[in-house]
Image 1 (spheres, rainbow, N blue to C red):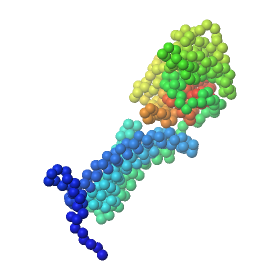
Image 2: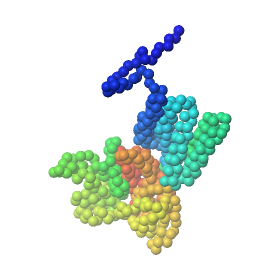
Image 3: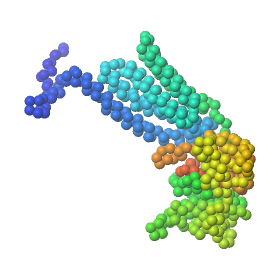
Image 4: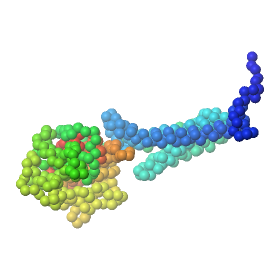
Length: 454
């Protein structure tokens, strides 16, 4: 048996000011409805915070995803692998941002949740399409931009048709699902038809010079990447920061280590340690007669076995020995760099292509850069080979997602080999050619490898 109890019997009053009472027992229906609508604001705020947190932490998925894809034998470029992942992540973030608010609207307006969820999915799809359109324009991907436009047209068209049809919810949901599918078509098509890349050359050996997970001081810049490893004679030489060596006054001192490895086996043959100011890496340069110049203080000239040649070289000689390539980096849009460190022919990079010109500037050949972009990563002394490095980083502080070196023929600009880096550095791996272009050394103190080129 039910009893109808007057609400006033259970009223509890809290005095705010004399003569004013706030009643909690029985709330005015209009006030209750207003509070339900006000609930949308904290739900929207919480959804925005959750979406921002998800966006910040989503970058931790990229590197493991690429590594796993390569382990499964998926032969696609890292950007092609990341596009569907980023699209899926952005779609999920849009759902986090929109769907809780849609449910709160259903609660406040006493509307069936599935109706508001349908609108929420449509709004999330439109936001994702805007993201695809923006990134496609920045990355020159017309197919993805067209897909975003088609997806928007499908979703908006489905909403219009749903207003005049008998199956409103189904029409609305079907249009949203079809729009989401269209957004994924370009990226999945690129994975299904990957571009062909040059083969990986034969690896001769790999060696661990120093076991550390953080090699920021040893791979800290593109400039240093071609100046910390050299192939000279029957040796591969590498210099790196081996750790702290105390202080010199108020200035921190590092212990710099120069190793000489056997070119056939990678075993350590000779080693020199010398202190120097922290951050003043003693770069090494290939010189004539298979000797190396060490930009230390004072400068040294050494044989491949690290024995001194004789008198020390001047600082100027240490800086100019070998082929200087400090300015040789991929320029901006369609700007070619004419400051090339070789004689004939000359290499020019820019606008995602490689040009070879003669001494009079006449174009001999032009080839596209594998992967669409790349920075200069060294050349052989005889000019028969040169390398470009392609990589992508993200985060703050930034970390590499992938890195690979493409080896090109110096006379035709054709790509002949590609070396993917599995043990990623902080910024850029070391790289160096043998003088005759037959070998390519690449890596960092955690893993230095030597490859025999075709």
